[in-house]
Every structure is written in structure tokens, then in C-alpha cells.
Amino acid sequence: MNIAFWLQRTAQIHPDRPALHLGRECVADYEAFHRRALQVAGWLREQGVIPGDRVALFMKNCPDYLIVQYGVWYAGAAVVPINAKLHGREAAWIIENSGARLGFSSPGLTEALQQAEAGAEIVDISSVPYQEIFQTEPIAAPVPRDPGDLAWLFYTSGTTGRPKGVIITHRMLTTVSLSYFADVDQVRAEDAILYAAPMSHGAGLYNMAHVLVGARHVCTPSGGFEEAEIFDLSRHFGNVQMFAAPTMVKRMTQIAKATGETGEGLRSVVYAGGPMYLADIMEAVDHFGPIFIQIYGQGEAPMGITALSRHDVADRTHPRWKERLASVGRAQSAVEVMIGDAEGNEVPRGTPGEIMVRSDIVMPGYWHNPEATGKTIREGWLLTGDVGFMDEDGYVTMQDRSKDLIISGGTNIYPREVEEALLTHPSVAEVSVVGRPNEEWGEDVVAFVVMAEGQALDKAALDAHCLDQIARFKRPKTYFEVEELPKNNYGKVLKTELRKRLEEM
Image 1: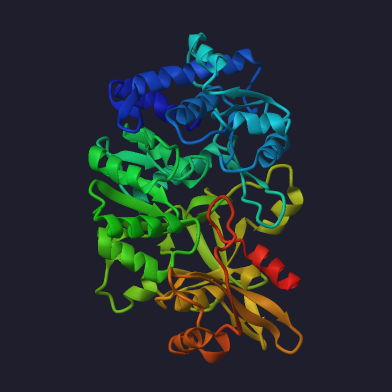
Image 2 (image 1 turned 120 degrees about the horizontal axis):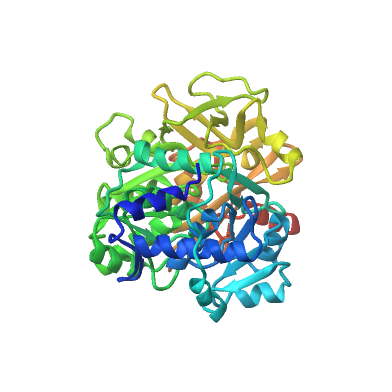
């Protein structure tokens, strides 16, 4: 089934419902949303785009993002979403690798693609040619697709080299969307989804569930993450749901506490995409209340591996509530999750191993990369590369990426555990822990620390703080004070960059 059929159905049943908003302004109801998508599909057909072709979207968040996306699907083609924060050369490489027939871009991004000599026709959504698309004769109906057909070609962040294209099918998008209702949150017509994180990634993957019920889609005027816009639009619309990276949740909490904002109108904030430290989510819940839900996924199994309910995030009564809050929750309804050893055999509960997933949400493979596919999918199981354990109640706790594990004196040390301890010290704003080669012990624990405003690095104080919370052998041997941590375009700390710095010292 073509996932875009959901828009057609909603437009037929509820044509007058408000659909697309830019800030407070409604720019399209569901009938107009559907009609414009049909016209985009008609135009694509005139350009020679056929079912199975790829069309790139190098765009900031805006209502036209959804119009183009559904137009591509209506035409039977697949979208190649590209994060608008990428460099033009990076975006051009993705366009070339995907074999995209053409692409759509936002003002300011088109020039970057032109300078990078992207090998495809690019249509700027602010241009006259784009506006002329809506003079095109629409196609009669969306093109049917098989569940296993490519719908969304997602390129991984590529922190250790060129990104890989993840094949995401219509079946995968359907399963992710229905799992949202079953395991994450309910969606009603009176709800609104607010896009503050990139629609090219996790935030955009939740649009289908909201289209299915005829909810409202709200893009911020800035096209991105601005705390003041989020609080203002949440108050205005009410019943707002949004996806946020942990760094966004932390920033929202800081700004809200500083300005007196309460988060009025925010009903659900789903967070994922990086480590959420215990101290940060506790502070967020204390301020905003029980509005937070955690999910765990990755590009190869988008948004759908585990979920930690709003009850579990807010609960302070269970004897092990802190352990549960530090977890990523339990397996979502449509997946099997197993913790495996190096041979792929299940390990006992409570024993660390690699998190493995089997489900209809798992990719069939990487785009034109069978070697990488063979290393990542074995006998139907996705090897996530994440190390964690499962408790007796099925809660999965991530410890670290397998490549980030530190082995010192033959003992495993998980950087996140050390980071969690250091972040509870009032002088520490941010921290990232990596291993440094040591001829005698194998590796030393090294911490890169961003100090809180007005604070100076005090190694003795941090050592004492660590010794109060974790074993002596886990505490950092060296601390480096830095002004900021290197991060990629999705807010994830680049530990590979930190290791390079150590090599150069």
C-alpha cells in the first residue's frame, strides 16, 4: 500500500479540516493539501519521473515540505530527505548517490547545491517555476505501490565516513505509524504536531500518523528550533505534540525556568536521537509535568524499537523508577528485541550485549551496499551496534555504542555511566568521555568537559564527586576543559573528533 493513500482518505472524509500551518496561519485544509500534492505528482510525471524514481528534498521545515513529499509519493516515487543543515557538497553527494532525478530546495539552500554542482535539476520552492507547478493538471489518483517498495531513502549521519542510504519501505512507514498509536501516544483530530526538529528525520516520520486522523501540522516561522516560538505556538494551538532531541529538551527546560514559561498547550514531547541524561529528564519533568515519552530507534529501524511511556518517565513511586527512567523502555508492539553476544546468541537478563531487533520496521538493506547490509543484518536480525541489557521486566538500558566502549585493564567501562556521574556536579554543563590508548592498561578514561558559566575546572573536586558515585577504576584519568563539544548536524557529540584531538596531543 502507498502510505500516501492516508492523505487521500482524510481529504475525502474531512476536506475542510485545517491541515497545514505556518506559525498561526492556516495555509491549507486537507482538500487543498491533497489537491496540491496531486498537482506536484502531475508535474513530476511531466518531467519524466516514474514509479520507483527518487526525488530529493533539501528543504527547511515548511508546509510545502509535506505537499512535495506527498506529491512524490502520489507519483509512485520515493523521497530522499536531506537535512537542511548539511553543507551543499554533502547534500550534492547524497543526491548523486541516490540517483535522484530532481530535487526541491528552500531559499538559501539552492545556491549551496548550485555551487556544489549537484547533478540533478533543482527547484527552489520560492521560485516562479515552483509556483507554476500548481497550474499543472493533477493526476487522477495516487499511484499504487507494493508494501516492500522504497518510500523514503534515508542517509545516516555519517560520523565515521560517507553516509549510507537506508531503504525505508511503505510497509516500514505504515508499521512505524501504527506503532505510534499502540506504544507512544494517541492522536486525535483536535491535536497538532509541531515541527521544530528536522522534518527530514524523526520529526517528519510522525507526520503520517497525524495525517491519518486529520490532525493539524504546524511549522515554526523560523523553520527550526526556537524556544519562544514553541511556547507561543503551543499556547495558541493547544494539544500540541512534538518530537525533540535530548539537547532540545534540555534547552527548553533552561529557557522555561529562566523566563517563567510553563509549557502551556504542550501535551506530548517525544524525545530520542541521543543520550538523555537522568538529571536532564528529571529536571524537565519537574518543570513541565508528565508530558514526556521516550522512544529508541535508528535509521535502520526508524523510531520503533522501544518506548518508555509518559507514566514511566514521570513515575517516582516504583522501587526501581530511576533505573527505568534511565532505560529506553520496552519493545514496541511490532518488534522483537534481543540482547545478543558476539555470535548472536541471546544472553541472560541483566547481562550486557548488543541490542538486536527483528521486525517489519527493520530495513531490507542499505542502498547499493550489500557488503554493509551483510554486516548489519544477520538471519533477519538487525545488529544495532548499541550495547545494553534487558531487565526481568523487559526494560532495555542502553550503555553505549559498541565502538565507544572503553576497555581498561581488561574491564569494560561504559562512557555514559561516567558522563552521568559528572553531569550531576553543579560546575559541569556538558561532558563527553572517550578512551585513550595506554600501553599498560589498554585504555585510559578521558573526559572533555564544558564548564558551567563562571565555573573553573577543578580536577580534585570532580574526582571526589566521581568516587562518591562510581567505582574508582571508572573515573577519568585526565580532564580537558573545552568551550564546546564537537557535534554533527543532528546534535550528536562527535567522539571520533575527540579521539582525533587526543591523537594530536
